[in-house]
Image (cartoon, rainbow, N blue to C red):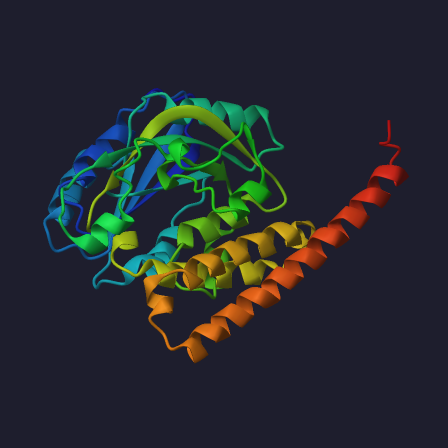
Length: 325
């Protein structure tokens, strides 16, 4: 790793728990990065019990100048651990990885940092990611949640070179290990976060892109490991959908998102429609099911009003700014 100066330009934060089979590949993929700047690896182990800690102790001893390793004395879970991890980052740029993912291009962070250094109008940049099936499972619950029909994230998400807030609102997912972003008060955001840990990465990405945009590189520079132990495989997807709605509703109280009301309502409606067609919801008595149906109906009405208001606002904005050809 070549260094032009002693200043740490990028903090790479890793949260891990029982990732014995993956953590070495994750850390080595970072150590293999070729850069002209100094970066730091910060690892928080959420009290692993499978030998992950032994591996990380070895890395910490060998790379003490590049790696900061902390271990929770008790299992705090991903949300509380994310808050603890956020207290340790303070570089000009940040990126986060889960301990079961890794990078597959040795100039990944150099190219991303170079872009951000020369393009201040972007709050961050990300790229496509490969999907790797690390475990085979016959578990029906896992198979419903796996991404085994896809080889890359771009096959089931719509990305564009300039990735705008409205695209993220529509649940186009950014691979966590792909994103590098400018220094932001992540600790403050997490401490004030009111929803559950479900979709926490998406909520954080919404905070990062707020009032700005992201650059997308059409390259697969990282790998997402899809396996039954992943957090998204442990809970019912309907629980995620209800939490997504809660996240979206919170944006309606944020002035930075006021122009995107139609997109927010549209996304809420999509989440409700999924819930209404789910086995979990359809198993309820109709009296209970009707409550969700009414909620969906109210948001459809709000969506229609928001679309009409946006069109009227656009009309005056275009005319007043001489944008009519």
